[in-house]
Length: 146
Image (cartoon, rainbow, N blue to C red; front, side, top):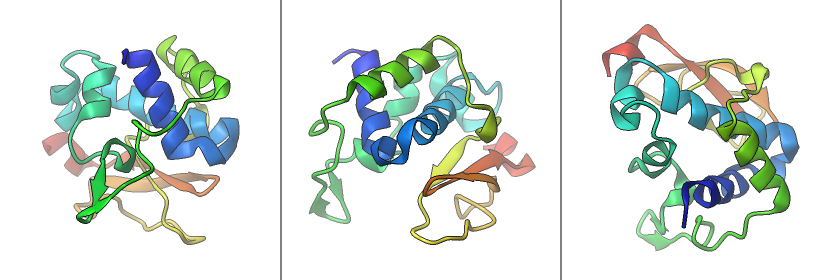
């Protein structure tokens, strides 16, 4: 599948139940990762390769066919993207960003009303905003050393 379809599937899988704002927020994180000029994601994207960011191992549950040794039925290979997820992918690929998540590089669903202060646990992201059920994190100074 091409990058556009993979991106739309990932958006649908990670944030399809979060409405347009939630999908744009997730898409923005992926685009931020592909354009950040320093740290781990700069090395992975190698100058802006969105597909390399999407396919980076261990980053998105929806890219995994198994989780914890069990089959993960909610993965991009089983998801059919909606027209809205294609529109959000196109919107992001055209260079648009969802301002409420600013330069966030990480997101997670805490399955709680509160966002942990840091994510991931290594402390390279600090809580910035919550959109729908997802918490969004901007990079800390520690991220630059990754």
